[in-house]
Image 1: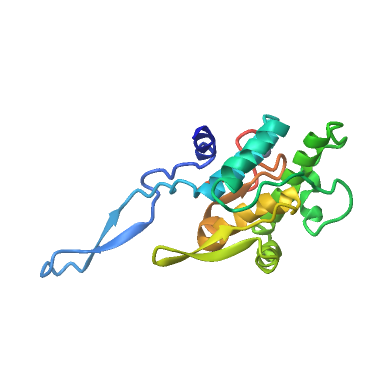
Image 2: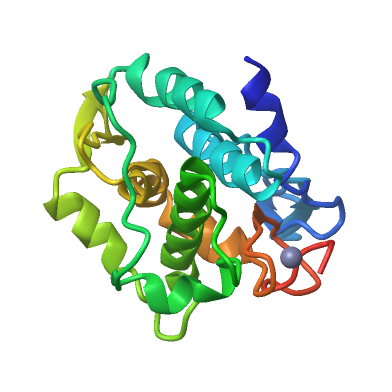
Length: 222
Ligand SMILES: [Zn+2]
């Protein structure tokens, strides 16, 4: 699908020579003990949930996302995989404090867009980025993870022989909770990946993954 390609661009590739050295046993009897072999380890491609969530954030940031695009994004990434029923209305409170608001006001325009969908989208993106910023805080603020679990917006299901977290937002949930559930299902499955690679720009709120960024709180453009 075309939407799968763009999020991959935000995943930086780990450069060779900087990877973790993996201890490998040398041939028996050599007496030299352990030999160290460097194996390049590029970042794995994003999960479908992460790719969908990043597509949303990028689409809003670049102003490509409009009402129709939002509708088809929801269809493609949430309705068709069976994660939620098609919502009859998209909603997001434009005013009032939500828990993540203190982390997200930096990413809201000074003057909200007059178009209602655009206003909902920028507000949603700011809240979602605000949640993710909590993971970069000291101490970590990851209450949005337990909030999503307790609200039932993510579920553990058996896939093959393993348990896996999947998004399960409801069609009447606010849009930021729906988008956040995609991130939460991914984060719960691989918390370390986020701890090691998550970068969020303090200026524009761009979210990307890079194992060795010059700075975790700056993007290429700011
Ligand atoms: Zn930036």
